[in-house]
Length: 370
Ligand code: G6P
Image (cartoon, rainbow, N blue to C red):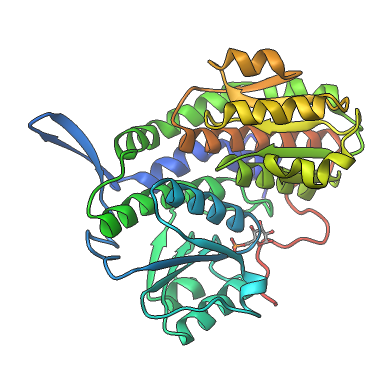
């Protein structure tokens, strides 16, 4: 086992570091550059789903658990930006009470392992109702890949640490490509974001490398040890990033952590905010003013705010108590980079507390019972 970990103390740390490679694998051959009359342009090329593959899809539902559920929420937000509605369900709920479907409904099961019992059951219920099913998974030959009508593989490579890291990033990158393909098939044209998004995705392995080289996550969290609770907030795609940041943090540190939609603070969570509840605020370049007013809301209750923010955003950097920065990039990509910083935050805290990072108590890599 030690040999497999290489120079790292834990598989989780190794897998965080592998993300430039795993992301390069995810996108390999799926973004092609074409030269035309007005110079070169990138376009999505998915062998599994040629143009028109989703022409008869009128409704999209996601079913997933845990980290994959957060990736699905991220996918839902990217689709919404492109004018395409979708719904995301926790598979444990959907398996009990499936949403109505028909033959024009596409139900996408997001599952790293392809073996999570609730996700499989949800996909089976959807299929029985006549829906088209698609497994977005890391494991070729998994039950989800075999049972669904179609499969898209995220190609992240094996993940050993119970806490999912590189597979979240590869799920989101795959969903970004899928969102563009769905948009083309549904609207007949590529989204206005396609050029910027695809160049951002192509640059992603290098951008993640920059984040990994940055030691700020470690330095900053040193100042917030032994607090009562850790909160994570965001809007739009930064909301699932906040949820995922909190999940990772609680899973491996055993400290209390919760993620909230920043706009929901006033509806309850604000009652919990004190000087002993640091708040991680995720900025992606969208909704900055609204996020800043949330930051001021919690600062007014004495909570220190750690902003995860573009290195170019001096207004935010000056307002927050501490900043963990990411390279400036398209918002859909910024969410992924912010998430890598939050993976490092959780890892460093858990490592300091000497937790069994790769095998947290009571948790399993794959939950194969309902
Ligand atoms: C378990 C794991 C999580 C994972 C979830 C869903 O809870 O501990 O890391 O996100 O299952 O797994 P899946 O394989 O379906 O993505």
